[in-house]
Image (tube, rainbow, N blue to C red; front, side, top):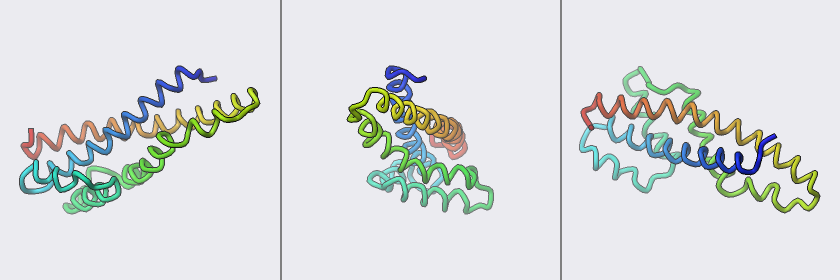
Length: 142
């Protein structure tokens, strides 16, 4: 059984992870793309996650040896729906339930989903953080 305090902590971690995933994708792209690093970053300044992912994937696969797997890209594609749910919907799915027992049941169901999504994004977050460090160094962008 997850407590509300633990839920809030994990929820906060999840939001941090999806934000850093999106930013790491931008930084990896800017490092790998030829040209000025800052200009490359500016190219994606207003881009949504779908465009960022497409641009990076094209670059990543261009040499025939991608750094990220199909599973990684599938997870990145899911980040949008994960982020949207946890930012805009999760609390609404249980806070208005009047019956205490039903509200707690729904909360625990959502808490299980939170744990799953946080684990999923954590693995990708860790992988992208390492890749970002490696690519910044490899392309002399540090």
